[in-house]
Length: 580
Ligand SMILES: Nc1ncnc2c1ncn2[C@@H]1O[C@H](COP(=O)(O)OP(=O)(O)OP(=O)(O)O)[C@@H](O)[C@H]1O
Image 1 (tube, rainbow, N blue to C red):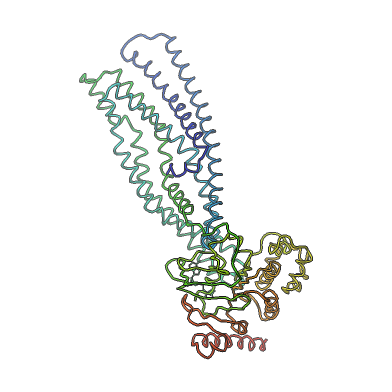
Image 2: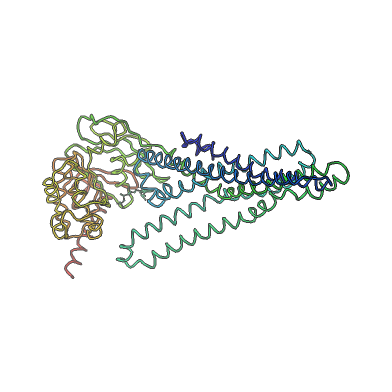
């Protein structure tokens, strides 16, 4: 565990080690007073005379030792904290750099809750390891070890007696550690689920209220919180008895030494001064040992967090090069692409050509793998096998920036960044003038609702995000895409949030964005892709048919089914609209 964290310590490794040495020196100063006590007690017990000067000297010695102990301990801790916070910063930067290289899809899957926990809470909890457990633990363990060794030189028989509590204490400690690690995964998972549920609950409050799902949503929220509480309590309950056992037995060095040692002195196997010295020194080990052991209960948790971080650090980065795009045209080709999120295959040996300048549509039931193909094309994930090329160049053989400049992707759910609506549109082309932004917003049919906002296009997206409908947010995304003017457009369920009123406007906007471009559209409402040059039918991750609307309507059973469902849903909307 320590080795893993130390890999991120860099230049602060030496400072952490130095802080351990300073704390060790401080601990030795806390032990010396017991030697002074021995020097005073022994002559008294042996009936020898001692001078006042000698006692005064020892008392002053004790005072100096305690002062040195306090000063060195503070110095050691300040050094260890300084090193620890620098290491935490390095860890966070390494994690952020790693995340930049990870496929975006993998990051999205993790969820905001676990990422926040990893970046903030998990890394913060390592402060305990770096600033305390490591330097303090090492110092507080090393000093008793040194004492034990010296006890053997004083009287090996008495030294062995002081060790008697060790086997019982250490066994209890190992059992606690084993129990802690065994259940750590479930405990940690429960925490992760609770984190994500809380964030989802807060983010989804609006939907929850609109659909009157308060009770249902609260039940899930409450269930996850209770599960976390139960796991935490179970975990602590399992560990507590063992923790109590080793905490009480391990530092109890007099357990055997006092009765057996006295008997040894009576029998003449050991001397009384040696017994007093051994007892004094073994008593001095109690406080450092307890301090060191105090860190143990949290080590399983920290170890688990380090392993989770390591997994993230070791995750396969997105395959890409620094190459620019050098394809011959903007034709996209999927060749025998296989991809699975977990175990279930979402793209099953898909081969598909999206010709330059043509409109290609993906149709299929929900969950058939349409969005997955879009995400693979924009390189959110690397396929497990097969390849995706643009103009003959593999997307893994170019930089993500190069691919991004080729594709405008309007995803199912649109996120608006903090900043004004104008800034959000400007993301499509950072050098765009205000006039160009207004023009794009106009083409994407945004002006009609933007004009109604108090600050117009300068309204902050945070406020506007709440006021805008899903369809309006998608039109902002379309304006961004128009401004970007990329040669390939991917529209994923672009009508997902669109109400019938907005539908025509969205279609006009899409027409505008895709004119003369290579276009891949994913739409549930088949009439909107009826005019596509090619419609590909997806079933359970497989591409089962492709052709024009007329061809598929004639030859493909699945398409006929999808078409009927689409027309029926449109009629239902018209009927329900009449009734209003
Ligand atoms: N992040 C994910 N992790 C695990 N499985 C996923 C993930 N995203 C999608 N899937 C699964 O992959 C399969 C294909 O999903 P995909 O979203 O590509 O389908 P779709 O045809 O676009 O569906 P829809 O029309 O409802 O958006 C489904 O079984 C889905 O449950």
